[in-house]
Length: 204
Length: 253
Image (cartoon, rainbow over all chains, first blue to last red; front, side, top):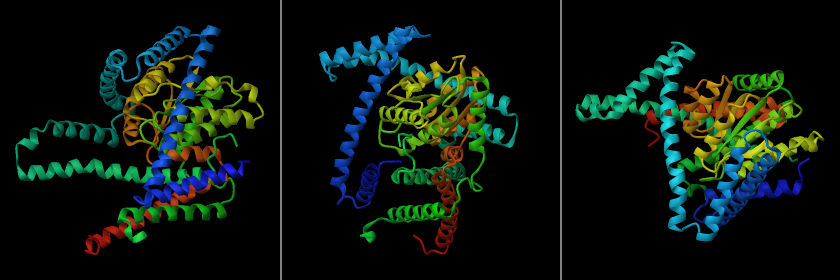
């Protein structure tokens, strides 16, 4: 059984934040204080999670678990970044340049890979799911929006064509709104479950 | 005070109150285990993964997403936790327990609490291990790279993505496809759902993303909220129709 005090504190805090959001700017100061608390708690949670990650990988190294070499890389990079950050400060240009020089090329390469994978998945969709109304309409709309994205048709400056393009460009928004309403309903119910302690963490 | 609010705020409050009312009515009316309103695709997809996992004695990998408190607070980022708890209840004593990955510190801590709670409630605290719920990166790319790296492991039975993710997650879905690992994506962001659509996965869209846990859980509160969700959907449809008629009649600006 969930502890009643925890439940009451959670419920009252949730309702207070909800009310403060709607009566801003009068409730703005309350909201700012609560948001600051959230930031502090989230930062502490991140520290706990990172500490736990490092401990888990240290355990992998000690046990010699499969893939422990990657664990060594993780622990060494963590120690190096932490030591440099503590010695030089997190705003130091050398520190930022050092970390950035490693992270940026990797992230750029990954994003390039995502573009390729996306293209390959779009091609594979016909092989995996066959030629159906769904896959054909997906392919046709992808081609249409690729052409519209080039901006060539818009530059022709034909009023009727521009009107048609505006209509076609609004179509994804209609579908997206339908999905967003569904997500909103699901999220609202989830929020109520969390607010009234029905969701729980399993640590009841 | 209400008159000072914008029309959108008033509508949001009205929908919230209506949702709460429907939830309370359903909690009072619904008998436990009664689940006639709940759509099946979400449940079937996740149960398929569970069967695979228990039959083959392999591990189910769950990606919980990377956005609960990372950039801004987004409750949708925690949508995978209820699914994780529902799955854990059924797979606690499997040869390979459920393995979850989070890309957000708070989410990782909450996920660990869920895993610990599940083992404690089953009086098997000694089986709990911190490595069952790991932080796998603090940015979307780091999270995806780490999750993708874990997928080829031969002891994995399936991949379940549940939570807030961006289209980069396609890398993980593609890796699962290359290793013939069945995947289910219940991603709560629109772009993530689009990524799930083009990948070779069972892709849950819209409110289905939030339904799978309720159906698996079979708890009265979860079932009541799913029923209330259906009622709210009808109310919104009627409201939209009414709004369109009023707009056409010139009664709305």
